[in-house]
Length: 183
Image (tube, rainbow, N blue to C red):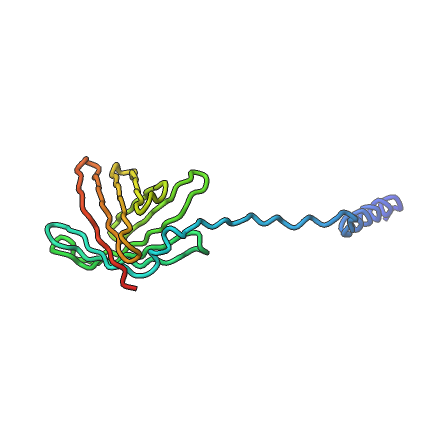
């Protein structure tokens, strides 16, 4: 091998070795991330709901039963509602199971209620909050349906819900849902 080729080759190998050697930095370590505060909503106005409720509402001339179980969920950021309504009549021959959540949007300063069920039902409603013993929820869904619920807290173990729903064709139905707490 010619001497200048050996020198060039040796220099290249040396340069690669030096570039592969880790360099110790005297720079300060990166600061620890600042935790983002997780401010939980003040659920004190709705904590009376936690537990099991038996509800009835008139539907096609008969009282339709439903069981609602409320609990806190998602690290206290949401209140969850599990709903079960057994088969009711020849038009609804399966049990409806639904899950809903109540939370608070601090930017919009609105209470949020959203839910889905195994029949394909869904909804989202908002409310500015309780006024005395009543809370009014309103919502409009992408399919054009809308609803208004005025829930009255009769006591810590009884509620009355004046519900008005409008389907996408503009047909409106109104009913009152009564619930009593069983545990």
